[in-house]
Structures are given as structure tokens and as C-alpha cells.
Amino acid sequence: MDLSTVLGFALGLGLITWSMMHGGGLSGLVLFVHPPAFAVVFGGALAAVMIHFRIEEVKHLAKVILRTFLYKLPSPSEEIDRIIDYATLARKEGLLALESKLKQVDDKFMAKGMQLVIDGFSADTVRDILEVEAEIAKQRHATGKKMLEQFGTFAPAFGMVETLIGLVQMLSNLSDPSKIGAGMAGALVGTFYGAFAANMLFLPMAGKLDQRNKQESQLRELMIAGIVAIQSGEKPQLIKEKLKGFLAPADRESIKS
Image (spheres, helix red, strand yellow):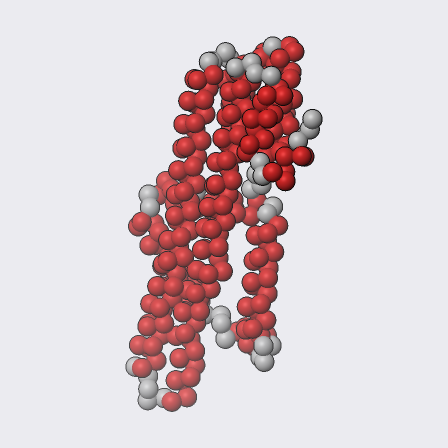
């Protein structure tokens, strides 16, 4: 679980809830409970996203959202250490010896690269296959990010739609002044839901997914470089020096000697 994401949501939701309850306690929260506004904002935004994207893409939306919370990328320094260990084993016992390590590899991308090496494909072929797979994954993640961005765009718009609906209903009942205040408050809840959904949920999650995509792309490049170097029979020490280039200078000392 991504601690930064969880803490950010907890802080934001806590502050907003405190503000909603300020001066009114639990009764203050009730003012913001408006099922029609919720349905129009979130349901309307979902409908617009379904129009914008193919159903094959939309059905993976839940996984995209969960990815911002639950998916944890391996540490680049740990991956370098792993690659150096594999390179040392392959140099001592041959590439086929790597097969004993496959069950220990959780990352499917890394496991596929090692399997290609074990199967005897050339270094250029291994690089080509892995680069295509990395690019497809990058495009898939970019689509997920775009969906969340579209949610962040549509939610405030549908919040305004709900506000206009509420205002029309309120103005049609001006003969009863006692209902004007409640009607105005209910109308503005839609705007609140739209702003909240965009700025507290969808746009931050899109930003997080974009950062994850960049980090994963860099990690995939590191893995490809390491796997191809193993296939080429390069010395483990040389591989280590090459892969250190993927790390910030402050992190390079953590690599095992």
C-alpha cells in the first residue's frame, strides 16, 4: 500500500470533514448529504467517461484506481542487486542455471525476460521483445491516467448541472419563502460534490498514476539493460557500473559490492 496516497487522502478528508462539522457538529454533515446530487455528479461523470472511452478500457477503471493505493514498485537498487546475483550465477554455471531462480521472481516482466534468456534468444531479440512489452504497458497506463483526468474534468461540470437543476426547482417554488434557503443549499451541494471529486479524488489519482508510470518505465529500462547484459555474458562488475546510471548519486552506495 502506498503510504503517501493514504496519508494524503486521510489529511484531505479529515480537513474537509472538520470544516463541514465546524459550528454544526454531526448535523452539519447532514447538510451535505444529497443523493440526487451525488448521483448526477458521479453517475454523470461515469456516463461521460463511458462515451469518451471504449468499454474494454472502462471496465479496468477499478484496477486503475486501486493501483494508486495498492501497487508498490520494486526498489531500483534491489533490482540491481538481483540482476548482479543472476549475472554472477550465469557466469559461473551458465544461463540455464537461471531457471532455478524463476520461481523467486514476482515481477512478470522480469520473469519473462529471464525466460527469454534461458530459452536462448539473442540479446537483440530479447531487447526487442521486452521493449515492445514495456511500451504497450506504458500506453495502457497512460489510458488509465487519461480516464481519471476526464473524471476530474467532467465531475465539476456535472456538479454545475446539478446546481442548475436545483436552482430551477427552487425558483419554480418562490411562493413559499421558507423553502428558498434549503433549496439554495441543496442546489449548491452539487457544485461542492463536483469540486471535491475533481480536486480530492480524480486529479490527484491521475497525477499519482502518471508518476507511477514514469517510475515503472525507468525500472523497465533498468531491467532490460540488465537482462540483455546477462545474455551478452558481460562481467557482473561491468553490469553493476552500467546499471548504477539509473540511480541518483545518493542511492548508488546502497548497491552491494
